[in-house]
Length: 293
Length: 176
Image 1 (tube, helix red, strand yellow):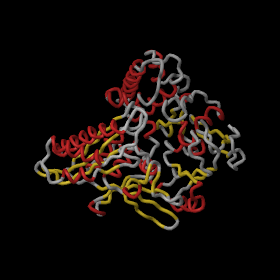
Image 2 (image 1 turned 60 degrees about the vertical axis):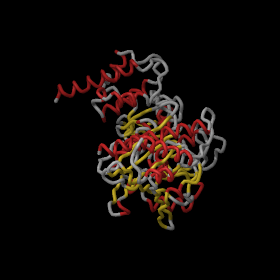
Image 3 (image 1 turned 135 degrees about the horizontal axis):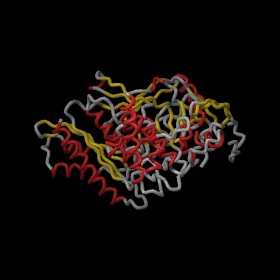
Image 4 (image 1 turned 180 degrees about the horizontal axis):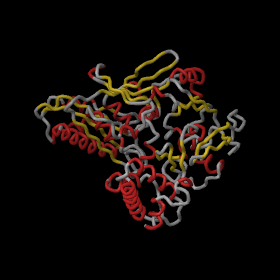
């Protein structure tokens, strides 16, 4: 369990980092939190010639809220650790949802290093942050020597550990929409042990007006080889009065959008059933949260 | 630490490096691929930090990085030059055991002792951030679940954590 040899460089600015990537391209691996990269290196699943450490890049730190952009967006910088998201100053229900989900990511001493954007860049189908980014239709901000671009989540996730990132691009942030005052949020996950990845998970956000759903977002982890947004289920909810039957119908629609990958001890059908329950639970929690706020 | 690897001679040779560990600066030389855990153990002889799983699961290698618990098997030594690193060797102050160390002994929170440095450093960091960790059962459970112990069944460790947290708060109240 020792990494293969590689060269090491650190960057102190985005400019410097993208200059290195312009030259090194796919030979380089970017080191942010390193809580997945180091494991991949130990197992020698990746063998980069260069590890580019972006930890000194101050401009990649912090969560910034931009109330002007598209009805309000939060920009999560590439060096924001999971731990920081556990207790963001509230203001928008999105911060509550981030806090809710952060506690499901690894263990506290791993959360002190691992990053939100790193998880979105690594693109594991079971990752909670990928499900959230897809479910809320967020976007990934990247920089390269050629300039900056913002890739919508549905174009970003292309497969297991496969994204729209070009080898010369650095992920600089992930953008998520603010949910607006009064929105309710919920999250539900099933995993075999405390130390396991999610077998399946669902995050939900809803807005209600006098008991009727006016807006809904649902994102699922491990529902396919990419995170899945349950668009048909969201549509089914909007305009209808909340009832147990409505939430169950929405969960059924969400499962119809899933294409689970079978694994040992987790067949396609088992995962579908788990998603059915988890989507319903996350929606129930989101509705209760909306009513309470 | 200069292990050849199957593609030795790739140009990734040892780099000079300064690590600040337990308040002392150490000069050493490490290949970029050397983890902080290996640099501490093999380079500096600080073998209190244990290596169990080497992929972030067992928590035996947990150290403090600027006061925050982190897995030293998931950090490269070369990325740690800017940090203040604390290992279990730096926990006792001038020959006096840290309250956590005393509590672990009193509560029989260890048997074979392999995981103990990881638990001590995890708890030292968490107690610094959350001095009333003993009153938050959910958080305490989550913190203890970060590390694996295959001997004790955790109950002694839980009692030790609670006892140390209370003692540390008491000390602070007495001296303030």
